[in-house]
Image: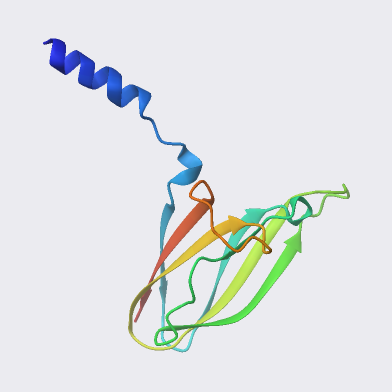
Length: 121
C-alpha cells in the first residue's frame, strides 16, 4: 500500500505543461487540392508559427505563408499564422509546427507545438 501511495504522489509531482504537448489534428484532402492551416499567434511578441522540419514534398507543397491580423484596432493584437499547402499525391504525411522566434536557431523543448496528420485521397 505504501509503494502505491508513493507512486501516485511521485506521478502527481511530475505533471507535464500542456503547452509542451503537441496538439494532434487530422486533415483530409484530395490530390491537387489546396488546404490551409491557421494557428493563433501574436507577431508583436516576436514569436510566430513555423514548420519544425520541412514538409515532405512527395505529398505536400507549401504554397504560401501569411499572417492575418485580427479585426481589433489595438496595437499588439493577436492574429493568425496561415499556411496554405497543396496536396500532391495520395498518401499520408505529418506536419509539425512550432511557435518560436524566427531568429532563434534552436527550438526549445518548452516551445508550443501542433501536429497535423494529412491524409490525401
